[in-house]
Image 1 (spheres, helix red, strand yellow):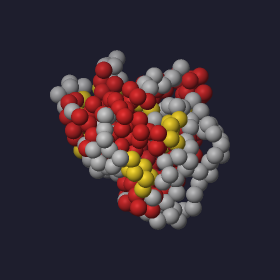
Image 2 (cartoon, helix red, strand yellow; image 1 turned 30 degrees about the vertical axis):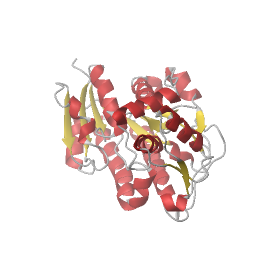
Image 3 (cartoon, one colour; image 1 turned 90 degrees about the horizontal axis):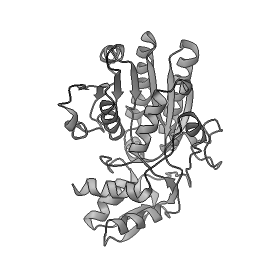
Image 4 (cartoon, one colour; image 1 turned 90 degrees about the vertical axis):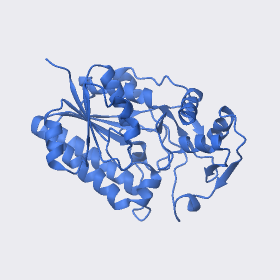
Length: 322
């Protein structure tokens, strides 16, 4: 029996590249596919010479290529998707197509050989719900379809429903992971990701821009912790057919995050508030809090986030300095 073979869609992205590193370190053979629309070759350049690594620059909408890649894989980690609130708002049609049709192609091809699929979903799924902490099986509260922000969440809901349908009807082994604000080295701020944006502003000495009143809170988790949890779930039979929150449950307001980044970066930047309308678009809606219930993933694979917020911020600072 040879090494296990993994395919990572969106593997040149932030999370995908860290996952590739981890699987290679575990002795797996790793192939990634990425169209580099939001991923970057820089993220995987250091892996290029690894004997067990190869990359394909193409879109997951290419059914022939996807069929071949999935046929020769044991596990598919499906990360390829439109990324970040800012990117989605600017590229709505493309985001819908890649998130829905792309995922459909992954499952159509995986179904032929009943290949295991780990589907990456998002905390956006929970929408405007105030029922905290968020449990995987609770009701969701979505905003109006006229508000562009919710198009992303709606596509990821369809992805999850597709995954569970393929599992129930076709017996495709699937695991769904809902990521909560995953951060770390190599994440870019250009698609609306808040921590790298703050760090970049702090290091450049320009104003750190907080959207809205800054009282909205999030739980920021390290990409290392998330990758660890995902790999454990992928290798655990009891995880199949189920949905898992993954991330940190340590909550911080965005204005407190800005202050922490400023302090740890030793920055002289001012902290400025910017109305949502200016940052995104008229009528933009945000949610006040977002906290995961991590009971299910803890009980299934013993997952506990290890990297604290300061350590996480410092890792992003040192990445930007390099």
